[in-house]
Every structure is written in structure tokens, then in C-alpha cells.
Amino acid sequence: MLRLALVGAAVIALTAPLHAQGAQVAFGGMAQDTDAPVEVSADQLEVNQSDGTALYTGNVVIGQGEMRLAAPRVLVVYVEGQGRIDRLEATGGVTLVSGEEAAEAERADYDITAGTVVMSGNVLLTQGQNVLTSERMVVDLEGGTAQMDGRVRTVIRSQDETGQGQN
Image (tube, rainbow, N blue to C red; front, side, top):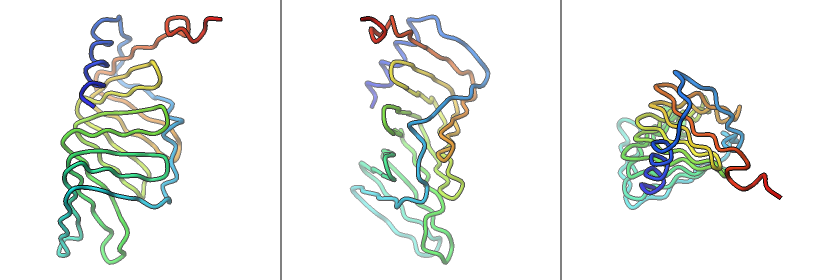
């Protein structure tokens, strides 16, 4: 994961990026069925019945449909009295992957009811050969879009540059 971040940072540093204050990004690969079951695996689990939370630590991987979220620490908050997950709070370096798209950040908050993921802190998004960075990204999983804010930097490679447009 760190390697992906370093490669992305190097690509951004060595090219002439486009700058913007905010950007709407197509996130087709991230479109997600938010009603699909959520599966969590981790090295440890601590359940707190009094506040309705579960803390997963160590190699946490969360899957829902085709989406995967990985982090060292994830707090799961349940809807009071209903036994279903309300939100997930992932910290310590988060990776979100769906299809060919991947995003990394320091933190991610997934509101399952709203179908949104808010990633913050050194956000790095890769879509094929394209790389985007910002301080914050809000992903609408049902609509398949994302909004990036906080000094957005973009590197867009042409098909000729990547070799995909050549015969």
C-alpha cells in the first residue's frame, strides 16, 4: 500500500498536474449495492455492549459486494437496538478498492445507511493510469461518483502515453 502511495506521489511530483479547488469524479467502479451484507475479518475483536460498538484491529479487511476496505483499525457502530451496522470508522492508513479503482487515505468513514464513504488525510485515488490527490474525498456508492476537495491535483495520461491507443 505504501508503495502505491509512493508511486502516485512520484508521478504527481514529476509531471505537470492540473490544479483545482474541488473536483467531481466519475466513480463507476465504486458503485455499490449498499444493501449487500458486510463481511469483516481481523486479528482481534473487542465488543462493547454498553455503547453498541465493535473494535476490529490488526489486518482488518471489510468486504461488501465487490468493494474491499482494508485498515489497521476499524470501529463498527451499530444502530441502537436493531443489531445492524450504522457506520464504520477506519483509521491508521486505509485502502478502498473496487474494480480497477483504488483509493488510499489516513481515515475513512463509511455511513452504510447513506451509502457514502468520506476519506480524509492525504487522499490518493487511482483510476487506471490516472492519479488524483486531495485532502478529502466523499464517495457516493449508490451513484458511483466522488467529490474531491482540498487542493486537488490530477495527472491524466493520454491513451498514446499509456500505449493503449496505439495499433
